[in-house]
Length: 196
Image (cartoon, rainbow, N blue to C red; front, top):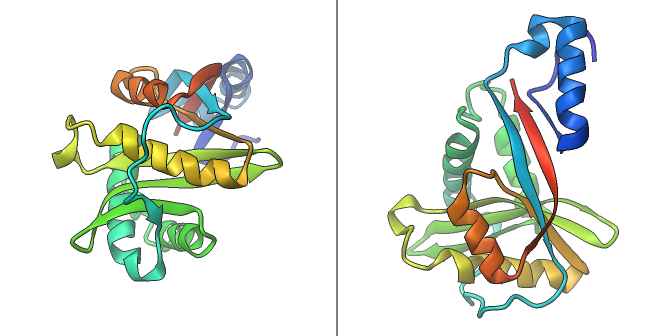
């Protein structure tokens, strides 16, 4: 860290992230004190056994043939979740990242009529744990009970390769928290995110 910030967020356990960000703000001023948003409470949830409900069998790994639709869904998810356009920089890095997720077998979804209507990714994986991220359902399909079976499907894929699946979620997203709890996830900690 220094007076010229070169990153877009700070993410981690809330007990560390928030004091760390405050210390950077005091030390280096505007580069760190001017934020887009501070998400102080993000439950960290894990599951290490089969989901409590039946998985949607349409969930499958995204393939190169699905990429354009998957990428459109990823951009929609990012814009909705982060509140910024991931393509704004124009350097193609978000497209490259999404392509890497697909090519490495870390992207999952439900495709209907050639269109991704649900997506989720494995963002980080190390040892016995893989983190699920980027969970998104087409807004036109929300409120119909589709999320829980879709999340259960992704969870089954992850648990086939890792003993534990984890994720974190914004505390204000109560519908998502309820969805994860119904699938069988339990809160084990709390993250915070500072967005610049």
